[in-house]
Structures are given as C-alpha cells and as structure tokens.
Amino acid sequence: MKYEEVSNFINGNFAGNNLHRLDVTSPLNGKVISTVPLSTASDLDQAVQAATQAFPKWAALTSKKRAEVLYRYRTLVEKNTALIAGSIHDENGKTINEATAEVEKSIELTEFACSIPQITAGEIMKVSDGVVCRTEYTPLGVVASICPFNFPHMVPHWTVPNAIALGNCVILKPSEKVPVTAMKMAEMLKEAGLPDGVFNIVNGDKTMVEAICDHPGIKAVSFVGSTDIAKVVYRRATSNLKRCLALGGAKNHLIVFPDADPNMTATDITASFSGTSGQRCMAASVMVAVGDVKHIIDKLCEETRKVIPGKNLGPIISSESREKIIAYITRAEQSGATILVDGRKAKVEGDADENGFYFGPTIIEYSDPSLMPEEEVFGPVFEIVHVKNPDEAIQIENNSPYGNAASAFTQNGGLADEIASRASAGMIGVNIGVPVPREPFSFGGWNDSKFGAGDLTGRGGIEFWTQLKKVTTKWKKQEKTDWMS
Ligand code: NAD
Image (tube, rainbow, N blue to C red; front, side, top):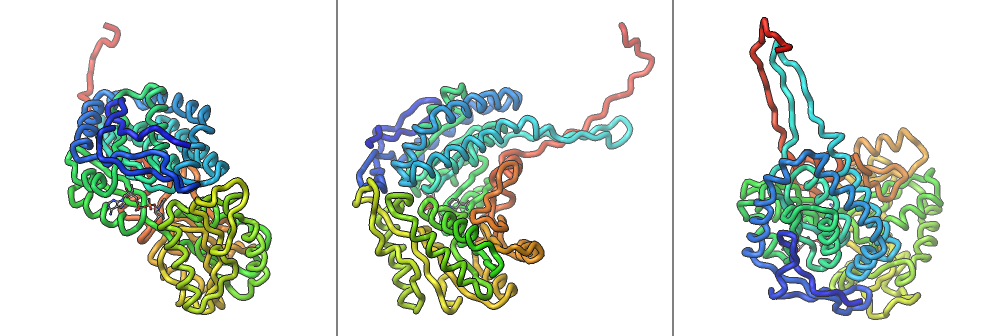
C-alpha cells in the first residue's frame, strides 16, 4: 500500500509539502510507503499562531458545545475503523486485529472526553455569611502532544480529545516513523466540525521536539516515548517554565506463584509480552518466579510456540530495532542464560512478506537474577528469573529503575494485596498481563517511567490540561427591595 505524502495540518489545511522529507517505511515489507516532512521552527510558529488565534473563541464555548464536536468525531472514527486500522497496520506493522483494537481504544478515550462536561462541574460552597467560593476548570491555551511510534492512533487519543474538550488548542507531533494515521485524525476532526486552528499537526524529529519545548506560545507539553528522551523533554520544557508530563519506557515485572492458574497465567503472559510484538510500555517483560512454577513455565513455552511471525505476530518497527533485540538475546545467551524459546530461529508464515522485519517470540531464563540487564528490550522477548520467596520477588521489582506496571499471578488474595501494596509501579495487575487502567481511571507509571506530577489520561488528564480558577463572591445584602418591581 502506498500513501500520499504526509503533510502538516495547520489552521484547518494540509500544508508543508515542500519541506525536507524523510521516508516512511512499512515494517511489513521494508518498502517506502510515504514521506514525512521534517518541519522547521517557523512551521511550528505558524501552527502556534493559528492555535493562539483560535483559542479565545474555542475556550469561550461551553464544554457541552465543545463535546458536541467530539460526539460527531467519535461516530466518524467508528464508521472508519477499518480504514484507520489499515493505515496503522501498514505504517506500524501490528496485525489488523491489534490495529482494530487500537482504534476501539481511541473510541473509548474519545467517549471519556465527551463525558468531560458531566465531570468538570466544579465545587461550590458557602464559606461564610454571604460569601461563596467556587472552582472552575479553565484551559491552559496552546498545548502540545509529542507521540511515539507504537500506538499511532491511541496515544494521540490519550491527549488530544481531552485537551480540546477542556478548551485548549493543540499541536500534535506524531512519531516520524508513523505519521500517516494522524492525518486521518485531522480529516475526521475537521469533518466533525472542529474550528480551524484548534487542532494542528507539525511533523518532524528531534528538531521539532526541541522547538516545541522552546516555543514561548506553548503552555504545556505532554510526551510519550523512551525514558532517555522523556528526561530530555521534561528538563527542557520545564526549564522554559512549561507544564510537562513525560512518560518513558518500562520493564514490567510479573510475580508468579505456584498456585497461579497455569492456563490463564500462560495465555495471559503470552498475549502480554508478544502482543503488538512486545512494542508497548505495558507489555510483560519479566517473570519473577517464586518457588517451583515449572508447570507454568512449561505451559507458557507451549503457548508461546503458537505465536507465529506473519500469522499472529506483526514485525518489529525497523530492521535496526530487530538487530538490537537479536544482540540483546545473544548477549544474554553468552552470559549463561538459557533460551527456552528462540525467536531468532522463527520462520515467517502466512501471507507475510519475508522482507518484513519479523522476529519470533523469545523466552530467556536466567539462573541468577543479577545477570538480567535493567534495560527495556521493546520486542517480543520475555525474561524469567527465579527467587525463593515473596520478599525477594518484591526486592527485584523494587530495584528496577522503571515503574510502569507490575502484576501478581496467584489465587491467594492476601498475597496479591501484599504485592500490590509493595510494588513500586503506578499500574498494578492481579492475574492480568496488561493492567492498563480503563477510563475514568488514569494512566501513568512511576519512577523512570514518568516525569512530572499527575497522570495523562482519565481524571489525571483533566488536571493536566487545565488550571483551576477559584472564584470567591460576596454580594451586598439587599434589604427592603421590592422584588416584584
Ligand atoms: P522515542 O523516545 O524514540 O520517540 C518518541 C518521540 O520523541 C518521537 O516523536 C520522536 O520524534 C521524538 N524523539 C526521538 N529522539 C529524540 C531526541 N533525541 N530528542 C527529542 N525528541 C526525540 O520513542 P519511540 O521509539 O517512538 O517509542 C517507544 C518508547 O516509548 C518505548 O521506550 C516505550 O516504552 C515508550 N512508551 C511509553 C509509554 C508510556 O505510557 N510510558 C507509552 C508508549 C510508549
């Protein structure tokens, strides 16, 4: 599939076609499917100007009026699910089923934004005789959302619908690896009746991210991507006195006890670590096996062997990323780890193109937990370490620099509660491989998985994209008034 050249979207128009361009390569076959502009600071400035102009009118609307646009948008996304899923599949490589699930999640996120008028009514209280205090959520102004490659549609929906429902005007910077799907977002928001300038897209790479962090007209920046870049963005945006929330990478620990249900645990973990080819920040990364769980590991290996590249497993985003994953596994092997299932040997099946960046699911088992590197792998790779008791398991989880998710697999509620309370992670699962909190709960990790206060989605998003105004009123008491005059 070939797509038209990617354009910026500024003030309701696609533009920026004469800029320096980068190829967009499909991981499905290694072919160039489009090109993306590497925009300059002056392109960003045009977008900020358009957004700044649109802001007063958009912010002045009632939140119910703003939500009406999102209701219409939600319907358009639902109607065009197959089209959007097709472009996610082509540019990111995830399977059509996974891409469809991604669009469904974007719909759920938009529905939450549609509910914002109902949940942002504010507080009101008589604080002394004749004096009343009330709060109002007010928008920030022009805000920016910088996105990664792994969810070309969903991650922009973590931020854009909430930010605009709350009265802000938004600049979206998609990943330069997957910029095609974002154009569909622009088209559909326009068709839904969003006024020009409220939503803009400026494409680019590092230079554009830096320009966003530096632009004085942008009040807040959200970032989702790897930890190293999240740190850079957080430091740069906050040093320019912007509000910033920067979500980073992850290495998620699953603490598995011998009493866990073997079938449920094995299928859940397989789906978690191999789904979207392991390229998600909530993927299962490490099993911390407490005591003898060989029966569960055997079942896990059996389930994993059913995951076939090209059939029910998409490719890795690029050949460089695939090489990095292979090098990681080779290093683990050289350090003495056992490769229980070896994705390096997997054959591509189905209708898949052999030139795609496919890689089979892999399970690495370490005899000594200290041999496992701290780094995030970001591929369909699952690592297993063994410990003797829950305290040792918690220690391993707590020692990880990350803190996105952690899960306990057991039938013992007390033990599960103990893990939930002592794990150093923002999102906890019990017998769940991908413990993403669903709306209205908010998404956000801890430690090196997130920089900045609060969370990005759900109720957390309301706090991030607004500033609270506190209004205190006192009216002179009117006496002897003829109310009927
Ligand atoms: P990335 O950090 O390479 O890129 C993210 C964004 O940063 C892109 O828009 C890119 O253009 C920009 N960028 C890249 N290099 C930059 C630089 N040197 N300076 C400034 N900006 C730069 O991340 P990715 O590879 O696109 O996505 C995968 C990463 O994202 C993984 O680490 C994954 O765990 C993480 N992620 C985290 C979450 C979360 O919620 N915590 C969600 C999704 C993905």
